Picture 1 (cartoon, rainbow, N blue to C red):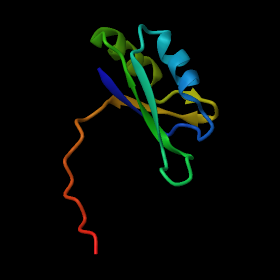
Picture 2: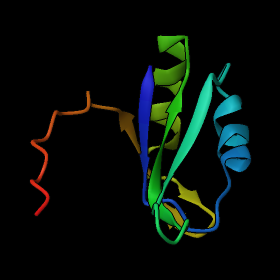
Picture 3: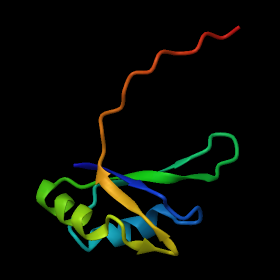
Picture 4: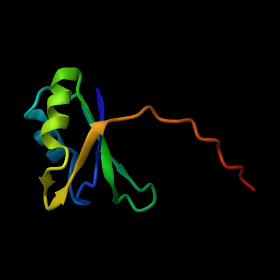
Length: 89
């Protein structure tokens, strides 16, 4: 299951996030979204866990909890929507 993790502290690393989610099972991947120009975190990311029951436990346990001074949001990620591309002039 792919999970959305929002309201992340800007200084958090993918390794720190992996450690938190590993308490609930195997973590396949962690991806913190960054600004392509500054490289700074946008404050959200995605964690993928192969076992849905472990992912559900992580969502129930972590959603709304404090992580490094911020209350994080954790839920199942929605599929990415195709957005029309803006024309370049």
